[in-house]
Length: 158
Length: 191
Image 1 (cartoon, each protein chain N blue to C red):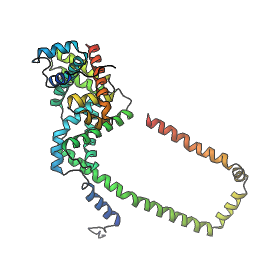
Image 2 (image 1 turned 45 degrees about the vertical axis):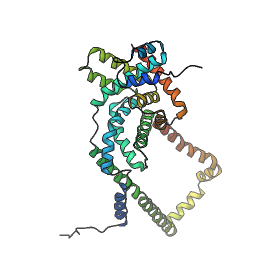
Image 3 (image 1 turned 30 degrees about the vertical axis):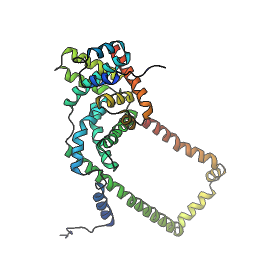
Protein backbone atom coordinates (compact mmCIF):
# COMPACT_ATOMS: atom_id res chain seq x y z
CA UNK A 1 0.00 0.00 0.00
CA UNK A 2 1.23 3.50 -0.85
CA UNK A 3 2.58 5.47 2.12
CA UNK A 4 0.63 8.68 2.77
CA UNK A 5 2.35 9.98 5.88
CA UNK A 6 5.80 10.39 7.29
CA UNK A 7 6.88 10.70 10.95
CA UNK A 8 8.61 14.02 10.15
CA UNK A 9 5.59 15.46 8.33
CA UNK A 10 4.28 17.39 11.33
CA UNK A 11 7.64 19.09 11.85
CA UNK A 12 7.92 19.95 8.16
CA UNK A 13 4.37 21.34 8.11
CA UNK A 14 5.02 23.43 11.22
CA UNK A 15 8.20 24.87 9.72
CA UNK A 16 6.44 25.65 6.44
CA UNK A 17 3.38 27.21 8.11
CA UNK A 18 5.62 29.43 10.24
CA UNK A 19 7.55 30.44 7.07
CA UNK A 20 10.74 28.94 8.45
CA UNK A 21 11.18 26.55 5.55
CA UNK A 22 13.36 28.66 3.31
CA UNK A 23 15.68 29.69 6.16
CA UNK A 24 16.26 28.69 9.72
CA UNK A 25 15.23 25.06 9.69
CA UNK A 26 17.12 22.18 11.07
CA UNK A 27 19.72 20.77 8.63
CA UNK A 28 18.63 17.25 9.51
CA UNK A 29 15.03 18.07 8.61
CA UNK A 30 16.11 19.61 5.32
CA UNK A 31 18.20 16.53 4.54
CA UNK A 32 15.24 14.31 5.27
CA UNK A 33 12.92 16.39 3.07
CA UNK A 34 15.39 16.07 0.21
CA UNK A 35 14.92 12.30 0.24
CA UNK A 36 11.26 12.05 1.34
CA UNK A 37 8.67 12.79 -1.34
CA UNK A 38 5.86 13.29 1.20
CA UNK A 39 7.77 15.92 3.19
CA UNK A 40 9.11 17.64 0.07
CA UNK A 41 5.56 17.98 -1.31
CA UNK A 42 4.24 19.13 2.04
CA UNK A 43 6.94 21.81 2.33
CA UNK A 44 6.38 23.03 -1.23
CA UNK A 45 2.59 23.20 -0.99
CA UNK A 46 2.34 24.61 2.51
CA UNK A 47 4.98 27.28 1.83
CA UNK A 48 3.12 28.32 -1.32
CA UNK A 49 -0.25 28.48 0.49
CA UNK A 50 1.19 30.37 3.45
CA UNK A 51 2.83 32.90 1.13
CA UNK A 52 -0.43 33.32 -0.79
CA UNK A 53 -2.34 33.88 2.45
CA UNK A 54 0.23 36.39 3.74
CA UNK A 55 0.13 38.32 0.45
CA UNK A 56 -3.64 38.19 0.16
CA UNK A 57 -4.76 39.13 3.67
CA UNK A 58 -3.32 42.69 3.86
CA UNK A 59 -4.90 43.57 0.48
CA UNK A 60 -8.36 42.32 1.51
CA UNK A 61 -10.87 45.07 2.14
CA UNK A 62 -14.17 43.88 3.53
CA UNK A 63 -17.25 46.03 4.20
CA UNK A 64 -17.59 47.58 7.63
CA UNK A 65 -19.25 45.32 10.20
CA UNK A 66 -21.85 48.00 11.05
CA UNK A 67 -22.86 48.18 7.39
CA UNK A 68 -23.15 44.39 7.09
CA UNK A 69 -25.30 44.34 10.23
CA UNK A 70 -27.53 47.13 8.94
CA UNK A 71 -27.96 45.55 5.49
CA UNK A 72 -28.77 42.21 7.13
CA UNK A 73 -31.40 43.84 9.34
CA UNK A 74 -33.04 45.60 6.41
CA UNK A 75 -33.07 42.41 4.38
CA UNK A 76 -34.47 40.35 7.26
CA UNK A 77 -37.28 42.88 7.68
CA UNK A 78 -38.04 42.95 3.97
CA UNK A 79 -38.18 39.17 3.81
CA UNK A 80 -40.35 39.04 6.93
CA UNK A 81 -42.80 41.53 5.39
CA UNK A 82 -42.92 39.49 2.19
CA UNK A 83 -43.54 36.31 4.17
CA UNK A 84 -46.25 37.99 6.25
CA UNK A 85 -47.90 39.30 3.10
CA UNK A 86 -48.12 35.92 1.41
CA UNK A 87 -51.18 34.51 3.26
CA UNK A 88 -52.93 37.87 2.90
CA UNK A 89 -52.29 37.88 -0.86
CA UNK A 90 -53.57 34.30 -1.06
CA UNK A 91 -56.73 35.31 0.83
CA UNK A 92 -57.23 38.27 -1.53
CA UNK A 93 -56.88 36.01 -4.57
CA UNK A 94 -59.32 33.45 -3.13
CA UNK A 95 -61.85 36.20 -2.42
CA UNK A 96 -61.43 37.57 -5.93
CA UNK A 97 -61.95 34.10 -7.46
CA UNK A 98 -65.07 33.51 -5.32
CA UNK A 99 -66.63 36.83 -6.27
CA UNK A 100 -65.82 36.28 -9.96
CA UNK A 101 -67.44 32.83 -9.78
CA UNK A 102 -70.50 34.23 -8.06
CA UNK A 103 -70.86 37.00 -10.62
CA UNK A 104 -70.48 34.48 -13.45
CA UNK A 105 -73.16 32.23 -11.93
CA UNK A 106 -75.59 35.15 -11.57
CA UNK A 107 -74.89 36.23 -15.14
CA UNK A 108 -75.35 32.70 -16.50
CA UNK A 109 -78.61 32.20 -14.63
CA UNK A 110 -80.15 35.49 -15.73
CA UNK A 111 -78.84 36.07 -19.26
CA UNK A 112 -80.93 34.57 -22.09
CA UNK A 113 -78.17 35.40 -24.59
CA UNK A 114 -75.61 33.46 -22.55
CA UNK A 115 -77.88 30.40 -22.26
CA UNK A 116 -78.58 30.34 -26.00
CA UNK A 117 -74.84 30.62 -26.67
CA UNK A 118 -74.24 27.64 -24.37
CA UNK A 119 -76.88 25.58 -26.21
CA UNK A 120 -75.26 26.45 -29.56
CA UNK A 121 -71.84 25.48 -28.24
CA UNK A 122 -73.11 22.14 -26.91
CA UNK A 123 -74.61 21.24 -30.29
CA UNK A 124 -71.53 22.34 -32.32
CA UNK A 125 -69.53 19.58 -34.10
CA UNK A 126 -66.20 20.81 -32.64
CA UNK A 127 -67.34 20.12 -29.08
CA UNK A 128 -68.63 16.70 -30.13
CA UNK A 129 -65.24 15.92 -31.73
CA UNK A 130 -63.35 17.03 -28.62
CA UNK A 131 -65.66 14.97 -26.42
CA UNK A 132 -64.89 11.87 -28.53
CA UNK A 133 -61.11 12.35 -28.23
CA UNK A 134 -60.72 13.67 -24.71
CA UNK A 135 -57.45 11.76 -24.09
CA UNK A 136 -55.79 13.04 -27.28
CA UNK A 137 -56.82 16.63 -26.60
CA UNK A 138 -55.69 16.41 -22.97
CA UNK A 139 -52.33 14.92 -24.07
CA UNK A 140 -51.78 17.63 -26.66
CA UNK A 141 -52.65 20.30 -24.11
CA UNK A 142 -50.24 18.80 -21.57
CA UNK A 143 -47.46 18.71 -24.19
CA UNK A 144 -48.10 22.35 -25.00
CA UNK A 145 -47.44 23.16 -21.36
CA UNK A 146 -44.73 20.60 -20.60
CA UNK A 147 -42.40 21.23 -23.56
CA UNK A 148 -41.92 24.98 -22.91
CA UNK A 149 -41.62 24.27 -19.16
CA UNK A 150 -38.91 21.62 -19.76
CA UNK A 151 -37.06 23.96 -22.14
CA UNK A 152 -37.23 26.74 -19.55
CA UNK A 153 -35.85 24.58 -16.75
CA UNK A 154 -33.09 23.21 -18.99
CA UNK A 155 -31.99 26.75 -19.88
CA UNK A 156 -32.17 27.90 -16.25
CA UNK A 157 -30.09 24.93 -15.08
CA UNK A 158 -27.42 25.64 -17.69
CA UNK B 1 -61.00 71.38 -0.47
CA UNK B 2 -61.01 67.79 0.76
CA UNK B 3 -59.84 67.15 4.27
CA UNK B 4 -57.60 64.11 4.15
CA UNK B 5 -57.05 62.33 7.47
CA UNK B 6 -53.52 62.67 8.81
CA UNK B 7 -53.41 58.96 9.74
CA UNK B 8 -55.22 56.32 7.80
CA UNK B 9 -56.90 53.46 9.57
CA UNK B 10 -54.54 50.65 10.58
CA UNK B 11 -55.53 47.41 8.86
CA UNK B 12 -54.94 43.77 9.72
CA UNK B 13 -52.31 43.70 6.96
CA UNK B 14 -50.40 46.59 8.53
CA UNK B 15 -50.42 44.94 11.95
CA UNK B 16 -49.14 41.62 10.64
CA UNK B 17 -46.40 43.41 8.69
CA UNK B 18 -45.33 45.45 11.71
CA UNK B 19 -45.22 42.30 13.83
CA UNK B 20 -43.16 40.54 11.18
CA UNK B 21 -40.72 43.47 11.06
CA UNK B 22 -40.34 43.45 14.81
CA UNK B 23 -39.72 39.70 14.85
CA UNK B 24 -37.36 39.66 11.86
CA UNK B 25 -34.18 40.56 13.73
CA UNK B 26 -35.16 38.87 16.98
CA UNK B 27 -34.35 35.59 15.23
CA UNK B 28 -30.73 36.61 14.60
CA UNK B 29 -28.18 34.30 16.09
CA UNK B 30 -26.38 37.13 18.00
CA UNK B 31 -26.76 40.78 18.95
CA UNK B 32 -25.04 43.62 17.13
CA UNK B 33 -21.97 43.92 19.34
CA UNK B 34 -21.29 40.19 19.33
CA UNK B 35 -21.84 40.05 15.58
CA UNK B 36 -19.51 42.95 14.87
CA UNK B 37 -16.74 41.44 16.98
CA UNK B 38 -17.19 38.06 15.29
CA UNK B 39 -17.30 39.66 11.85
CA UNK B 40 -14.11 41.62 12.51
CA UNK B 41 -12.36 38.40 13.52
CA UNK B 42 -13.54 36.28 10.61
CA UNK B 43 -14.55 38.39 7.58
CA UNK B 44 -11.10 38.65 6.01
CA UNK B 45 -10.56 34.93 6.29
CA UNK B 46 -13.97 34.18 4.82
CA UNK B 47 -13.36 36.61 1.96
CA UNK B 48 -9.97 35.04 1.20
CA UNK B 49 -11.56 31.58 1.29
CA UNK B 50 -14.36 32.67 -1.05
CA UNK B 51 -11.92 34.34 -3.43
CA UNK B 52 -9.72 31.26 -3.42
CA UNK B 53 -12.54 28.76 -3.95
CA UNK B 54 -14.56 30.76 -6.51
CA UNK B 55 -11.54 32.42 -8.09
CA UNK B 56 -13.48 35.65 -8.45
CA UNK B 57 -12.95 38.73 -6.27
CA UNK B 58 -16.26 40.29 -7.28
CA UNK B 59 -18.12 37.12 -6.43
CA UNK B 60 -16.27 36.93 -3.12
CA UNK B 61 -17.48 40.47 -2.32
CA UNK B 62 -21.08 39.53 -3.14
CA UNK B 63 -21.03 36.23 -1.31
CA UNK B 64 -19.42 37.67 1.82
CA UNK B 65 -22.53 39.70 2.68
CA UNK B 66 -24.73 36.73 1.84
CA UNK B 67 -22.60 34.47 4.04
CA UNK B 68 -22.97 36.65 7.12
CA UNK B 69 -26.66 37.24 6.47
CA UNK B 70 -27.34 33.53 6.28
CA UNK B 71 -25.22 32.98 9.36
CA UNK B 72 -27.31 35.50 11.30
CA UNK B 73 -30.57 34.02 10.04
CA UNK B 74 -29.54 30.43 10.76
CA UNK B 75 -30.35 30.99 14.46
CA UNK B 76 -28.10 28.11 15.42
CA UNK B 77 -26.50 27.81 18.84
CA UNK B 78 -22.76 27.24 19.08
CA UNK B 79 -20.93 25.77 22.02
CA UNK B 80 -17.53 27.26 21.14
CA UNK B 81 -15.79 29.75 18.88
CA UNK B 82 -14.43 26.87 16.78
CA UNK B 83 -17.92 25.46 16.33
CA UNK B 84 -19.20 28.90 15.32
CA UNK B 85 -16.39 29.29 12.78
CA UNK B 86 -17.09 25.87 11.32
CA UNK B 87 -20.77 26.74 10.92
CA UNK B 88 -19.78 29.99 9.28
CA UNK B 89 -17.38 28.35 6.79
CA UNK B 90 -20.02 25.83 5.75
CA UNK B 91 -22.10 28.70 4.34
CA UNK B 92 -19.53 30.09 1.86
CA UNK B 93 -18.69 26.53 0.86
CA UNK B 94 -22.32 25.95 -0.17
CA UNK B 95 -22.68 29.41 -1.71
CA UNK B 96 -19.54 28.92 -3.80
CA UNK B 97 -20.79 25.53 -4.95
CA UNK B 98 -24.15 27.00 -5.97
CA UNK B 99 -22.46 29.91 -7.74
CA UNK B 100 -20.21 27.51 -9.62
CA UNK B 101 -23.22 25.51 -10.77
CA UNK B 102 -24.87 28.67 -12.04
CA UNK B 103 -21.80 30.06 -13.73
CA UNK B 104 -20.30 28.76 -16.95
CA UNK B 105 -17.30 31.08 -16.77
CA UNK B 106 -13.82 29.83 -15.97
CA UNK B 107 -13.47 29.49 -12.21
CA UNK B 108 -10.23 31.41 -11.87
CA UNK B 109 -10.74 34.51 -13.98
CA UNK B 110 -10.80 37.00 -11.11
CA UNK B 111 -7.59 36.08 -9.38
CA UNK B 112 -5.70 36.73 -12.61
CA UNK B 113 -6.66 40.39 -12.38
CA UNK B 114 -5.44 40.50 -8.82
CA UNK B 115 -2.03 39.20 -9.87
CA UNK B 116 -1.72 41.87 -12.51
CA UNK B 117 -2.53 44.60 -10.01
CA UNK B 118 -0.05 43.57 -7.34
CA UNK B 119 2.68 42.67 -9.79
CA UNK B 120 3.94 46.23 -10.03
CA UNK B 121 5.19 46.30 -6.47
CA UNK B 122 6.72 42.85 -6.45
CA UNK B 123 10.04 41.58 -7.66
CA UNK B 124 10.02 39.52 -10.85
CA UNK B 125 10.78 36.29 -8.98
CA UNK B 126 7.99 36.81 -6.47
CA UNK B 127 5.53 37.65 -9.27
CA UNK B 128 6.49 34.53 -11.18
CA UNK B 129 6.06 32.39 -8.09
CA UNK B 130 2.65 33.92 -7.48
CA UNK B 131 1.59 33.40 -11.06
CA UNK B 132 2.74 29.77 -10.96
CA UNK B 133 0.81 29.25 -7.75
CA UNK B 134 -2.37 30.87 -9.10
CA UNK B 135 -2.22 28.78 -12.27
CA UNK B 136 -1.63 25.60 -10.31
CA UNK B 137 -4.51 26.34 -7.94
CA UNK B 138 -6.77 27.08 -10.89
CA UNK B 139 -6.18 23.58 -12.19
CA UNK B 140 -7.30 21.93 -8.98
CA UNK B 141 -10.88 20.94 -8.29
CA UNK B 142 -12.81 23.49 -6.19
CA UNK B 143 -13.05 20.98 -3.35
CA UNK B 144 -9.29 20.44 -3.39
CA UNK B 145 -8.70 24.19 -3.33
CA UNK B 146 -11.08 24.56 -0.40
CA UNK B 147 -9.48 21.66 1.45
CA UNK B 148 -5.91 22.89 1.00
CA UNK B 149 -6.80 26.48 1.86
CA UNK B 150 -8.64 25.48 5.02
CA UNK B 151 -5.87 23.14 6.12
CA UNK B 152 -2.76 25.17 5.41
CA UNK B 153 -3.89 28.80 5.17
CA UNK B 154 -6.61 28.74 7.84
CA UNK B 155 -5.03 26.03 9.99
CA UNK B 156 -8.22 23.97 10.28
CA UNK B 157 -8.07 20.40 11.62
CA UNK B 158 -9.12 17.37 9.58
CA UNK B 159 -12.30 17.15 11.65
CA UNK B 160 -13.13 20.79 10.98
CA UNK B 161 -12.45 20.54 7.25
CA UNK B 162 -14.63 17.45 7.02
CA UNK B 163 -17.42 19.33 8.80
CA UNK B 164 -17.16 22.35 6.53
CA UNK B 165 -16.97 20.39 3.29
CA UNK B 166 -19.45 17.69 4.27
CA UNK B 167 -16.93 14.85 4.03
CA UNK B 168 -16.19 11.89 6.26
CA UNK B 169 -13.46 12.75 8.79
CA UNK B 170 -11.91 9.33 8.28
CA UNK B 171 -11.23 10.04 4.61
CA UNK B 172 -9.74 13.51 5.17
CA UNK B 173 -6.15 12.42 5.60
CA UNK B 174 -6.13 10.63 2.26
CA UNK B 175 -8.07 13.33 0.39
CA UNK B 176 -5.77 16.03 1.73
CA UNK B 177 -2.72 13.98 0.86
CA UNK B 178 -4.01 13.52 -2.69
CA UNK B 179 -4.85 17.22 -3.10
CA UNK B 180 -1.42 18.18 -1.76
CA UNK B 181 0.25 15.76 -4.14
CA UNK B 182 -1.69 17.20 -7.09
CA UNK B 183 -0.79 20.76 -6.20
CA UNK B 184 2.85 19.83 -5.67
CA UNK B 185 2.93 18.15 -9.07
CA UNK B 186 1.30 21.19 -10.69
CA UNK B 187 3.72 23.54 -8.97
CA UNK B 188 6.55 21.35 -10.19
CA UNK B 189 5.16 21.48 -13.74
CA UNK B 190 4.66 25.26 -13.58
CA UNK B 191 8.25 25.71 -12.44
